[in-house]
Image 1 (cartoon, protein in one colour):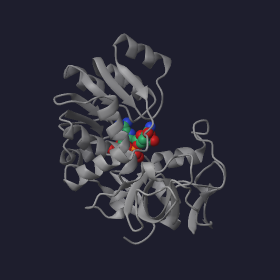
Image 2: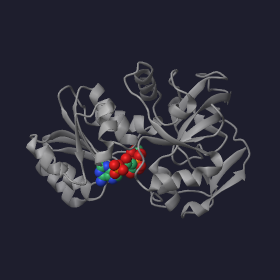
Image 3: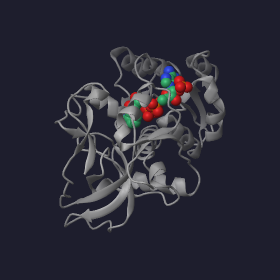
Image 4: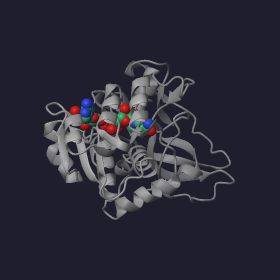
Length: 317
Ligand SMILES: NC(=O)c1ccc[n+]([C@@H]2O[C@H](COP(=O)([O-])OP(=O)(O)OC[C@H]3O[C@@H](n4cnc5c(N)ncnc54)[C@H](OP(=O)(O)O)[C@@H]3O)[C@@H](O)[C@H]2O)c1
């Protein structure tokens, strides 16, 4: 099969197109013919070696965690899907992934893809959807009337999280640059904070403090997110763990906070598929790339200015 492999840690120069053997499914795994794979910042973070401690890489490695495709084979104990089922999933980061024509995956973390989406659209969902559901519903317990601040609302995670927080009944604040305002309002954001001209901590404090801040920027933004949160609030963080100062302020304000990593989950993916098929949540793919052009796609994502999602189309939909 054709795949894009990473031969070492480094820039996009370490990525090359190669021919690999089609993997064989283990007993509880399915073999999936990949139609599309979404791009995520974690792809270039792993490529750069930033996550070496968490996810050590054996080379050559195929990156790409957001996958939509069709089941073509299954191990002896993998009975949950049949050949021809269209599925989507978030591939574990310590395994070969979706910048390839085939992948094997344990059936327990696979779900039927939303019926109303093609594979390109479906491949834009698992990572951002699972992250948002697990951060906002499970960790933060967002409920009707909560004031929730979603950082980087125009990006992949933010675009999904705004809609999910609205679905949970929250009043949604979001940070973005001013030209994204119409897009973010169309997703349901109640208040767009232009982070280039407004201080989100001021806005939050004037509103009496946020019940929940979804911290998806990292660095000093984490401490500032704690400042923006009410006493007793919740701050799920998905970029880095809290430093000592952030942890200490969170303790002082009785704020529940933690760095979290998304977990593969059929149940959550089925929930997301249902919200998509009921028209409650929409996905926005702003650009697609060919498999040969994964490096170009990652270079674009690395600029940090993406609206919605970027997706690699592997087989015509
Ligand atoms: N822990 C986990 O399980 C997990 C899961 C998923 C993602 N993540 C992490 O979450 C982060 C976000 O991921 P993503 O896929 O959403 O990234 P993304 O799509 O690349 O985000 C791009 C967006 O960020 C906005 N942005 C950049 N700087 C900003 C700032 N200071 N304030 C507000 N918005 C800003 C940009 O808007 P403008 O152009 O308007 O500036 C752009 O729309 C990444 O670090 C990713 O690795 C973690």
